[in-house]
Amino acid sequence: MAGITNGAVVLTPPRTPAVRGRLVDAPVAGTKRVLLAAPRGYCAGVDRAVIAVEKALENFGAPVYVRKQIVHNVHVVSTLEQRGAIFVDDVAEVPHGAHVVFSAHGVSPAVVQGAADRGLQAIDATCPLVTKVHREATRFSKQGLDILLIGHTGHEEVEGTMGHAPERTTLVTSPDDVAGLEVRDPDNLVWISQTTLSVDETMETVRRLRERFPNLQDPPSDDICYATQNRQVAIKKVAPAADLVIVVGSANSSNSVRLVEVALEHGARAAYRVDYASEIQQSWLDGVATVGVTSGASVPEVLVREVLDDLADAGYRDVEEVKTAEEDLMFSLPKELRRDAAGNTDERALGGRSRRLDWQD
Ligand code: SF4
Image (cartoon, rainbow, N blue to C red):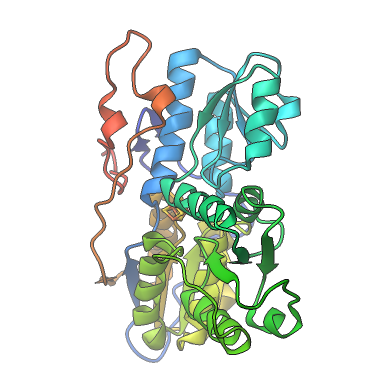
């Protein structure tokens, strides 16, 4: 398989564990085909965060420390590890004075302070759309509002957002949580959310919140980000026609896991998440004519290509892209990285890289 470029790094082809042989082209009723959802894969925030680590390695040399996984994808993390990134859970593990990158999921002010206390040179790769939610939390807190944060317990983004208004934030993890919520003042509430949730489930949670708290205030705009929404819309279009949906993405990737759920809710007969193509089981393809394929926002396209290669082995060579949106959003690099070691502005500072990864022939 060819390598692909990913900014400065040439990503090696996926390390495909040899857990099974080639898939078999077994006969099925109907014509075998793949419906490939678009948009899929890398979003602007993930792209920026991965480039931030690459550029920190270029400018400062290895090792560069990264607090938590820079993005939730095992292939991206292992590739950056091979280049000299060291992933840690806590800034306390980073040697005094070293460079540390904060991940796309964002950090609380306490983490920023912890890094400063150790004299670390911090590079903040928090996605600007997560920073937007942080700012909302801070502003609502200053206005004296209590915040209902819809999100998942233990997710790094949720921990970071709660850390911006710890005294005023209550986590709401699902629609079923709403009935048992205890609040100080039902007339002094605003809701915000994690960026990578199911749109439909979040709207149901808000509906129930409003039923209980009629004076609940809304945030000024959606917190569920454009990339999460676009990938869900695309898989909703694919799912009704799909006997099977394969979502490429890691188990700790919230938006990838949501894509499996959304596919099942919208008519896919079966849906599975895989990190690597080699995880596709022959039995999943029994009687399957149409396979839907998509990937989460932290997934490089090379992993999807490998899935398509394996499906082609099994007779699914007819690939039709189902596109529901164009994406061209780009974010500038963290300010600490906008110049190279010689002081020149880096072209990637302005987002000068395509979201889609190109094959090298
Ligand atoms: S999924 Fe959305 S919030 Fe998360 S990094 Fe991508 S654009 Fe930013």
